[in-house]
Image (cartoon, rainbow, N blue to C red; front, side):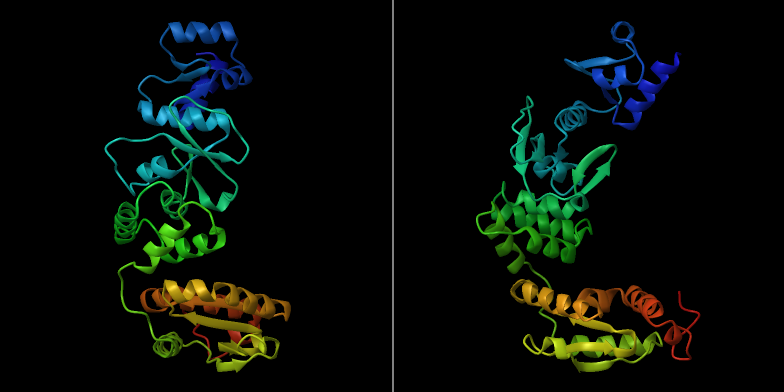
Length: 318
């Protein structure tokens, strides 16, 4: 096997079994040789200028690979939900997203133009760029009904595919008036079944217990931060020697969305004054205490190394 052919086959294997004519030529294969390899059955011609390794993947994924490569697109909406196993509709749609004002079309694909998709909201699965489960839920809210959306969201949360805190944070960052699906997802989140709203004082009590259980330094509670006089001048917990603030958040969605901008203002004010802010949710404190303690311990160690090696710290905890 020639070196060029080997490179093209390996490239196709890495990229979902698909290679374009331009990519094969760029890898050193002559166009006449490429045509012979198609005749020999080494490659299968899927569309003009698009080749695939025989039997590499199903036609559905081949089409998605081809569309994403052709348009520089990302798998999104129903197709992303199918890949993440969030939703399994009887009729699978080829749905991709491209940057706004990019008007290219691709036969058989529904193309969405988006302006707010970030790299942090894209993951690679078997060589395909796909929106994250949380971003996929947000996109789905614009193309499916509320009952369908609620069923998909509840199922994905129950199976641990979607992180609720990350979903809420991502939604709050990109939601805007007039954005398709915003009202639908907001209502679904507000009505989401779950445990009753956690009382703030109960969460603070549990956080105190966590500090004792892991032999962590005791902070000052309800610390008065002078730079926050205009926006509720107290913070939940503070380590003044480390210039560290810890806030615990037991709010459910409806109150969290209302306080989101205020929290940002408070955090920005603290950072401008030289302080670092850690925020932990009810779920993190109650279900992942070891991770919370580890995060807090590492942060204190970075900000105040003397405290990190004092008798208040447990050197055996990783």
